[in-house]
Image (cartoon, rainbow, N blue to C red; front, top):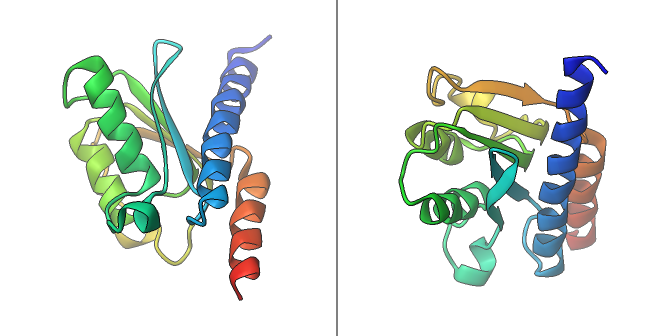
Length: 151
């Protein structure tokens, strides 16, 4: 099997786990975004949106996962980690990903309104590589379903 197929299969597996985190957020009435952080094939951090639950605008899935990964690994720099998230990070989360020096970002669905790639494309660390579109339809559908249920 070519290396690209292996990477895609791995990315899909971890994005599915991020999707499970998004479903937890949905069940809590939170915008359904989920995140996992992986180092050396092990999940070292996970999180989902908790902004309503915690009444904290910074309690995004990525922030929750970065905090967990930093605690698990015993340091603030996550230079050997890959972050998987179901929605393109906002500017705040992209900044946190950059400051944590995360090696690779993989996100599912684009966020045309608040995503970092349009609003702050240089907010990630220069050594961070980015992939997108993994399970995008599934993740986008969950978010759309959430907002339709609120209208």
